[in-house]
Amino acid sequence: MNKDLLTIKDLTTDDFEHLMALSSDLKRKRKMGQDVHFAPLKGKTLAMIFQKPSTRTRISFEVGMVRLGGYALYLNANDLQIGRGEPIADTARILSGYVDAVLIRTFQQKEIEELARLATIPVINGLTDKFHPCQILSDLFTIREKIGPLSSSLKIAYIGDGNNVANSWLQAAAMLNLHLWIACPSGYEPDPEVIREAEVSEGIAQGRIVITHDPQEAAYQADVLYTDVWVSMGQESQKEERRQAFRGYQINAALVQKANKDALVMHCLPAHRGEEITDEVLEGKNSVVFDQAENRLYLQQALLLKLLGAPFLEGASS
Image (cartoon, rainbow, N blue to C red; front, top):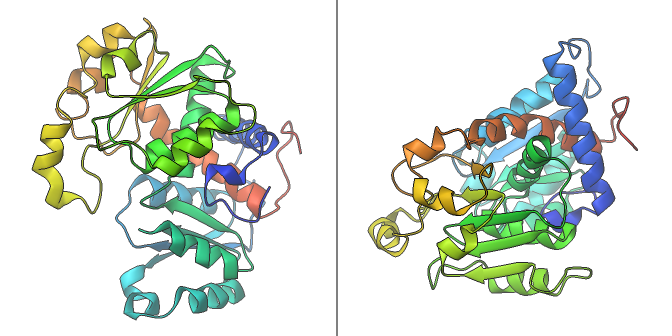
């Protein structure tokens, strides 16, 4: 595995399979109460830099690090010199001398890439405006847990904004040869470069990635229906414009009927109930939204173990 996780492209399929196995073992140990004295990251420190608000990313990484015996240091960017103009290059070198890994949740992808280039320790992308790899990796863990191995016949339908989550879904589809449909309004498609790279990736079958403006077509016989908010952080000034543009892209009972009977309904949260998803569907029998949220913990623990070179759990391949 690469030193860092900046995008899903930093993983090989072997890395992915190992993360899935580790996540499963970590969850099993936790549920059986076998992780009380499990502290492979004792003495290790994770610095967590947040330039954007966070619930699941912050809590899952912080709790995950502590449960593995390490220490998580929360750093609000406004409290750091980086918030007063200190170059990211200087921050990278300073942190490399203090801690063992850095998690950063920021705006521009180029900032995290610069941080990783100059840091001598692992850097993890906790979210940028362009990618959200930890979210999609834990979502894939949830799909495998609920449905089983990711077969070539599995259809995943993403309905909504072509944002950082959609971009990371495209990278995952390219890596794993998934059948991915993305339905979004005209002008709100995922990053064109990310689409192009996914479509021409080695091994991807022709027609397995489809970008459409028709949510009904995307949802038809889907095994997974996935959505995200219409208005992401930093887009508040576009709220009314986006609400108008995304009408018709809601996951509701009628759209769920287009999918397979046992299709999973997924949302990376926070959800704006009544906008991108109805309360009825979010709380319905097909929803695995809160399983998704819990699984962020186990996937991110697995990622920390792998990046920090800690001993792996019994049963997970090396």
